[in-house]
Length: 236
Length: 123
Image 1: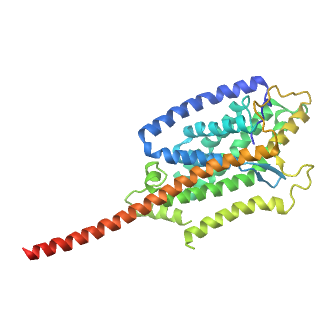
Image 2: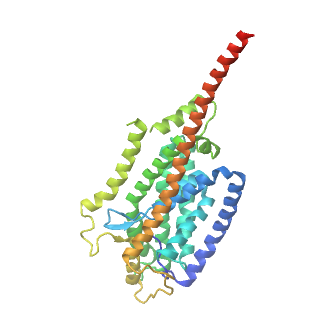
């Protein structure tokens, strides 16, 4: 659920646009480089973008009695690194802003910053950290996708609280208010997104071993231990 | 069902359960408008905090009705699902094709081996 059209004061809208722009430009460059160097990965890139498309169209009911949708950015961030997701996320946001009146052009910068910049980076960071400490692949994928989803909506709450501090309780009061609307609603959806991302990653491990190895998601060193580890991850 | 397929089905069932539980237990009943969008609620919260705030820009295009909007959302999901299905279908087909090509080349090899053996005998 993005910030609706016109719901950020002009100064904030511009500031978030300026903050997001370098990430999208840098992302577009690395996307072009990726495709040029590895044309065979175009298909998987498309599939990652498609995953974001599906998930951000799924409005799901949550325990708070309201609806929101997952983001689907964790998968692409884990596979292709976060800069690429800045572009794919922006495409999804543009589609929704232009055709669905969901989100908006004036709030695009802010929404790109939460969904296409912070979400992918936070999810990727958690994923890499957990992998480094020996967490099995699927466990790390679940946590990465969960964090990518939830952090997106935490940023949205911060953005709105900055723009609309509560007259009585200030920024923190407003943060509590927006956080209870966005972030709390999002927790079960982030779990759903984690599970769906694990599902797609399992299918990828079955179908695209070579590609995942090239991207560094699967490790195929000659050591039997490593192979057993990834096999164990597949079985989970 | 293989162990793999069972786990995948279980993952899907868990996601479905997470979506159905709030509906089944009526967790939206305390609201005037149960299961409305969180973004709409945020708009309401903004007008509570700052009653004078007027959105200064409106969407260039707005779906004329809920039906058209849901159609466009369905289109978005369909495009995404279509691309994903194409990807996995293509991969599966390629794997099967490679496996079949391997079988065939093994069969051809043994054939050829038998024939050269027969030729050798004739000479």
